[in-house]
Amino acid sequence: MYPIRTAKEFIALGYNVYCVCLDGGHIQNHMRELGVECFSTTSKAKLLSQQLFRLNNWLKERNVTVVHSHKSGDILISALLHCLMPRKSFFTEHMGVKRPKKDVFHKMVYRHLSKVFSISNETYQRNIKALPIELDKITPLLLGTYVPEIQPVANNSDIIKIKQSVGLPEHSFVVGTVGRVCYGKGQMHLFDAFCLLSEEYPDLHLLIVGGISEADGSDSLFVHELKEKIDKARLVDRVHLTGFRKDTKKMYSIMDIVCLPYHDEAFGLTAIESMAQAKALVVSNTGALPEVVNEAAILCDPLNPKDIANKIRLFIENTSIKSNYSHKAYCRAKNKFSINKHIQKLIGFYS
Image (cartoon, rainbow, N blue to C red; front, side, top):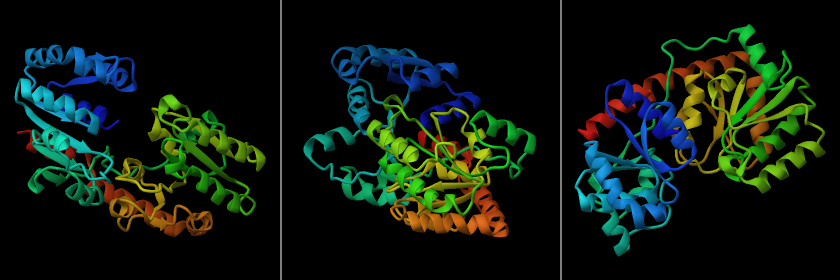
């Protein structure tokens, strides 16, 4: 979603934005909704073997001077385009490289890049060790999100309607999580934590927002195992899997607590989205999440359901602590992760 979000902001500022993407995918559909002209291909192999010169001419006709890649596999395309016609080339490393890429092939591919952006200090440290590029070409650049000018306040009538739309009772207390339903996002351990709390708090519900099909990037076997576990625990009426949602802002609005027990997150866009919506957060003590939330969330061991449950319980039992963390989360998002600040930094690099 990051390229879509930044495209929208650049268009609003009067820039021309174009997209190279797979035909019929989510990126193409979203970009077209924004009015972005796309060069689409059925496969990366076809683009490299048959369409590269056509793509270069397409970019040349549109006077494209900046190319920004978001997957490591796309850097080869960027490098070959650079050989045909030099352009400023950038790459946002969204994952944080764990295995060295300092062989001859990667050195040749990466050397055309103007900058590699690391989305957190965690990924920056990985990248300076692993990538075959000069240190001064790797720089941290935190992601951004839309942050309301004023801290969001729940409208009860709207909340009730949104709850009803996903099968939640009007007076339910909701713990929510957002992310692809797969092992690394920790939904299984969160469910185990929920089970530890379910009898103690009969109005407690668990809302799992995220793709549950392979087309949305989920792990089908993991989804099947999770559904079986929910059914076996007889908690089908209290655990709600929404599938992929475009209206995540609405989903956040009905969550009393957001829990992100991700195992090894490189950044955590959902964390800053949650903070922007002034949510009380429980997040993993691993990966980049502690860096992202700083003191604006409670940390948990993502592999320990009992610890996750205990941290959630702190917010359930003490509304003043919950309110305090909600406010701290919003303030951190506004001061550190505004999409406007992020875009201005990008413009500086592009220029």
